[in-house]
Amino acid sequence: MASYHTHSISLPSTSHPITTQFDQQLTRLRSSQAASTCSSSLLTYRLTCLTELYVVVDDMLQLPSSKQSLSQIQTVLDGSLRLLDACSTSRDVLQQSKEHLQDIQSVLRRRCSGAVVN
Image 1 (cartoon, helix red, strand yellow):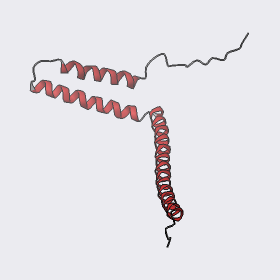
Image 2 (tube, helix red, strand yellow; image 1 turned 30 degrees about the vertical axis):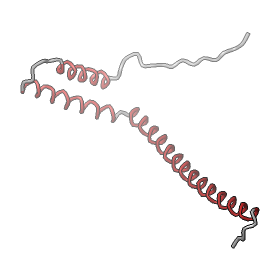
Image 3 (cartoon, rainbow, N blue to C red; image 1 turned 90 degrees about the vertical axis):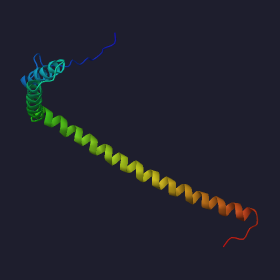
Image 4 (spheres, rainbow, N blue to C red; image 1 turned 180 degrees about the vertical axis):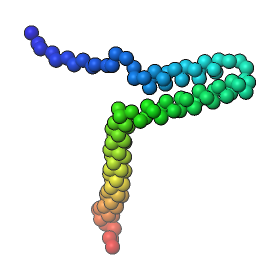
C-alpha cells in the first residue's frame, strides 16, 4: 500500500477585526451607490465612507503580516527586475553575435567567390 503525505492549511476561524471593518466600510460605500438621488448629504456620507475605508486600509497595511507579505512581494519584484536586466543584456549580446556572424559569413562568401578581401 502506497503512503501519501498530506498537508493541511490551518486558516483562522475568525477574520481579523480590521478585515471585518474593511468589509463593513466597503458595504456601506456600495450601499450608498444604490441611491438614485444625489444630494449633498449623500455626497458627504460617501466621502465619510471613503475616508473611513482609507483609514482601515492604512491600518491593514500596518499589520505585521501585511508588512511581511509586502516585503516578500518586494523581494520577488526585485528578483524579477534583475532577471529582466539579465534577459535584456543577453538579447543585446545575441544581437551583436548575430551581426558579427553575418559579417563573417559575408567575408567567407566573398573569399569563396574569389573577391579580394581588404
